[in-house]
Length: 159
Image (cartoon, rainbow, N blue to C red):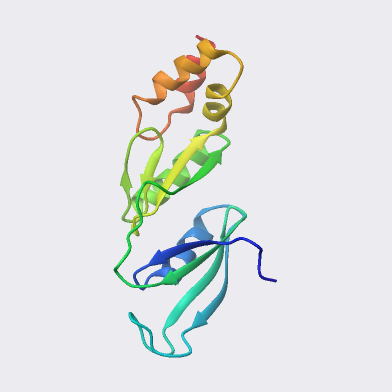
C-alpha cells in the first residue's frame, strides 16, 4: 500500500546503498520496493534503479536516483530520539564511521550528505520541560558538544 505522505530524498545513484545502510542501522527501518526505470532519463538508463522505497525509524521514505543536480543540506534532517548513551553512541558512530562527519549539538551527516540529529530523550524532555532553569542548563551544556553526552545533560538538568 502506498502511504499518503512519503519523504522523497534525492541521491546521485546511491539510493539503494543508503536505504540498505539506514535499514541495518536504525530500529524500525527496512528496504522495500526497488523500481527500475522503464525508460531512459536525464541521469540514467532504462533498467537502472530509479527509486527505492524504505522506512527509517517508522517514517516512509523514497530514495530517488536523480543525479548530481541537488544535494542534501542541513535544512532537512532526521531527529532520532535515543534512550541512553549506548544507543546514542551506536547510532552516532554508525553514521560518522561510515564516511559521515560530526557536527555540533548532536548533529552529524551521513556519507550521502543527509543530516541526522542523534538526540537522547533526556535532552529533548529537559529543554522542552516546564523547569526553564534546567532547560537552560541542559541547553548550555549541549551547545558545547558534538555527540551528546547523556551524563553531562543529566547533571545539568539536576543543577
